[in-house]
Every structure is written in C-alpha cells, then in structure tokens.
Image (cartoon, rainbow, N blue to C red):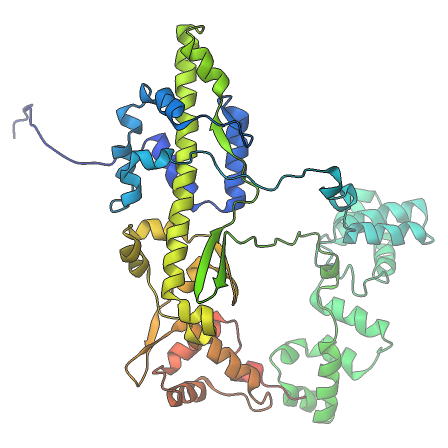
Length: 479
C-alpha cells in the first residue's frame, strides 16, 4: 500500500479554554472563604487592582476607555459565552460593567469594635501537653523522664501508643524492662486508658482503675471481646458458666468505658459553616440576600490609568499595564457574574421549595438540576457548579444548596415525595421504635406504604445505610 501526502480542508468547532475562562469557571464553584483567598492573592500580585474606598471609584466611562483598546478576541465576551451556552447574562458584555466595584465587608470604625487579642491568641491545650505536665510533676528520674517523653511523643490523638517497646528502648538507649516500667506508670495518667497498645488493653486499664480485677468484666474483656462486639451474650454466659443477666450487667458497665480516651483533647479545629445566602420571610414573600461579608470593593487603580493617558510611560510599561488591566477587569467581572448567578439560582430554589420553607422537611419537593436550569435559562453544568459547597440560611435552618435537589418516590395518590423527606421519616420511625424489639426494614417499608409512600424494602435498607443507622439486630438493646 503506497503512502502519499495530501492536503485536506476541514471545518471543526472546538472550545478554547483561555486562562481567563478557566478563572471564571473556577470562581463560580469556589466557596465564599476560598473566594476571599483568591481576591487577597490577586491584590498582592496585581498592582493595578486595589481595594476602593466608598467615594474613590473609577467612573464607568473611564473604565470603558481603559479596557476598550485592550480587549482582544481571546478575552472577548464571545469566548466567555462558549463556556455555558444558554446563559443570557454572559452574552451581555456591558452588564459586567454595571456597578463594577464589589460590595465591601465588615469594617471597624473604632478600635473598641475590634475583637480582643485574647480571643485571637489563646491556644487550646493538647493531649501531649497534659501528659507531659503529669510526667514532670511525678517522681521520675532523668532517665525515666526521657523514656516517658518518648512514650508520650508516640501517642496518637486517640490516646494509643503507636511504637513498640524495643523502638522506644532503642531511641532512649535503654532496655525494654525499663521502658515497660515507665509505660505502666504512664498508663496511670489521666485520662484513664491512655498509652494503651490496643482497644482491649485500653478497656482493661479502665476496668482495673475501677477496682474490677478478677471480676466478670475483666474476664469478658480478656477472653470474649469478639463475642461482646457481636452481642453474643448467651454464648458468653455458657462459656463462663454465669447467669445471662450478669453478662448483660457487665456489658452495660463496659459500654460506659471510653475506647478513645485521647479524643477529648483533640487538636482538630471546629469548622463553622458560613452561609452564602440568607433567605428571610417578609410578609408573604421570601427575600433572598447574598452574604458579601469579608469581600472588599475592587477597582482598577486610577493612578496607573492617569499615568498611561498622560503618555509618561514607555512601551514596556505600557504593555505591562495593559496586561494587568485586562486581568483586573476580568476578575471584577467574573466575581460579579458569580454573585448574579448564585442569586438567580437561590431565587429559583426558593420558588420551587416554598412549601418546604413554609412547613418543613415533610414538604420538600423533588427537584433536579434541569428544573432550575430551565427556570433561569442556564446550563445544568452551571447550576451544578453554583450549588457546590454553597449554603443557604433559611427559616428551617442551614442547608447546602445540593440538599434541595433530590429524587422523588411515587405515592398511591399519584403524587411524588422527596427522598430526603422519606429518609427523615425513616429516622423518625427508628427513633420511636421499641429498642428491645426493633423494626425490620420490611416492617418499615410496610409502615411507609400505609402512609401512601410506595417504597421497596431494599430502598429502605439503602436509605437506612445512608443515614448510618444499623439493622434491626444491631439496634436491639438487651438492657
């Protein structure tokens, strides 16, 4: 087969993802705190982008003159338009310039309004600090202190020792007997059960601390821990030759022990959710407001605009200023478009889920991305990005935007009920059941069917597992 070269004309369409378009898409799915970090970084890197004061803003005419000669095909509105077909707002370039500055966050007019430094500088005590304090307050020799510090340094956040005796002995140039002696004393520290090498040892330490040496509790922990985990109480009673009720009483005592004694000193910071949207009921209508706290006013610096218009800059500076102007203007426009899109999506969700806002989770409506996309004239992918890690504060509580999108189950009356409502009903049924005779998944399905919800047993099982609720045998309580 002979090979030959030919020229062929071919017309194709493809989406060219410029850096500006990638930035716009990225900003759309960022959380508000992540957006603050992006803005802060851009303020540091772009000298033409600055935070504006209330009466110091470029006029719209000045901004238009500044970017008119710098707009290139790669950053034109047509290319930005290709990211989300169907978004009418993106097709209007001038709409980006309306109110181009960004709403400001909280500002303190007086030092008395600022939070105190004590609230900013306090440090939470850690498990290591607590154990080291006890070590240095005890009667230990220098060698024992060295071994004790090595032991404490190898205790994880749950309170378990994650190093072997020979490893600690090698690190301290000591022998294992000396390490074992110090370890037994460290295991007497507070919290009880600390420095154990397994869950079994942790529970045994706590049992012995309560004076239960040689008791049924200790025997169960030593020889029948697996049976205890699977709740084989009758098997334990037969093996130990004791009464069944005695085993139940011992299991109840063991259930009061803490398998993770170090968790109370966890150093993990609590992450509070800050709402991106607030929904208030005013009369018979719901008002949607965006949370702009923490985001500064952004503008293009007038100093560089005046310097360029006066002709006092050379060609190299002119090119640099032009590039930074494009970057600053695009960021401002992208942030504005992000806020407008979030507002439109939140407004649409509020219309669809009005019954939920009025009456609670039992009236949550089945909703998919396509419904909101058709309602506001945007693409489904845009709705998906907007609802990622965004939260709405409503009269019913704080919810992620994705919470309002869920599938539906049919009812015997021909209507549909949201899956989240069914999950909530399953949780309520399980919470009210007799723990000595828990309901099976089939029984729960029958109860829901009696409430006109058509649901199969396997669906109940799936929803129960999503809710992290155990099966009937796991929920059963013997005492």
